[in-house]
Image (cartoon, rainbow, N blue to C red):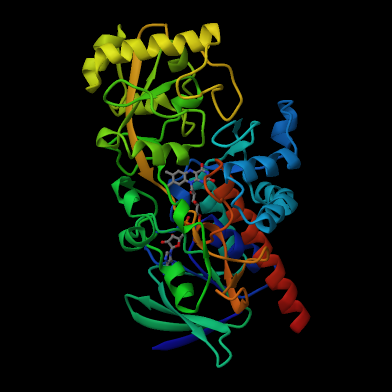
Length: 459
Ligand SMILES: Cc1cc2nc3c(=O)[nH]c(=O)nc-3n(C[C@H](O)[C@H](O)[C@H](O)COP(=O)(O)OP(=O)(O)OC[C@H]3O[C@@H](n4cnc5c(N)ncnc54)[C@H](O)[C@@H]3O)c2cc1C
């Protein structure tokens, strides 16, 4: 057993941990970033790279009407009023600081889009793999230390229960890292943690496992052991929709926000497709084979955006996962859907889009109240069979707005901070696109700034 000392120990190298580590190192702290796996980036580097911010240069350049109030209201609504208001307020208060910090660190937002849970184009897309590589480069340039294949297995505490460091397991043995100014849990969610999913959301084991290979919920377990409180554990849901044979490549497609409908094997619609995609992910699990087939026409197909996650039909067609045919009946045969029922379903939907009759599943817009429905009439017709993908869990330890972990009695556990997907209470019942990378950056930066402030005050 060896022992090391540092100012700040950050566990996990996704957007949350990397932001905290880079900003803390740049503020002059001695920082160790410990990562369980051999590669850095966790779920972050598998993600679509969308960050949710309002009031940005990109929105202004496109004349997009948005405001911090609308953003907060959307977060509150999509979470079914179950989010911790203090966490939402903290995000809104500090989002501009995080957005500017990312841009100052070389992040370029190449596209803005409206997506799950949003009432304005608020998702800002980045080349996330490059973003993470650059943030890590800047961390090491600022003197930070990276320990790959170092898995935190236990939080170390003093006699008063304050966290003083963590025990790490590596191929070379165990290391105790003593952290003078705190330990930051940034260990991500438990999308790969079948044991924890079995406890909190067993029905979600039917979704396709995904997310970072190291995301088995270690951070949650370590904090749990110290009595940490939890939130949103009953809201865990996969994201709709990814092909049943999806590999490690991100191939989620949201053609339904562009005008597709979703049908089951019986050719029937079963959910309002304009809702957030976690809610859709939950709904699809109840259908035969857990399958929902996105059905669209040439008009929607023409909206494909190559290279942009969630909208890249060209890439998915290249994988052989999108089918097409000249008629809906032929298309139905290709993907194993009842043909007569599909034709009838599309006819009914087209009357909703063109004549304004009430929709059978209550859909009124393309996405979350925004966008006119368009009829599915233009051949060829397309089908993308998709399931729920267990990308993220968005449930975990409770924190204060300053990211201090609190125990089941509502008291702060001194020395322990949590940021990113390991935290519960931010999203509530469902999820807005971009708010996870966004909160990783927002709260990661705040932890770094607050810790640097405390370190300076105590020097
Ligand atoms: C396919 C997909 C698409 C997505 N698209 C988007 C999107 O466009 N926008 C958005 O906002 N969100 C998106 N998300 C969600 C988002 O990517 C994650 O919620 C976010 O990246 C989590 O960041 P994090 O830093 O908390 O955790 P992660 O990025 O998962 O990093 C956690 C790290 O901690 C490590 N770790 C775990 N246990 C330990 C331990 N004991 N010791 C040391 N290290 C440990 C893990 O190995 C991992 O590297 C997507 C997710 C997926 C999977």
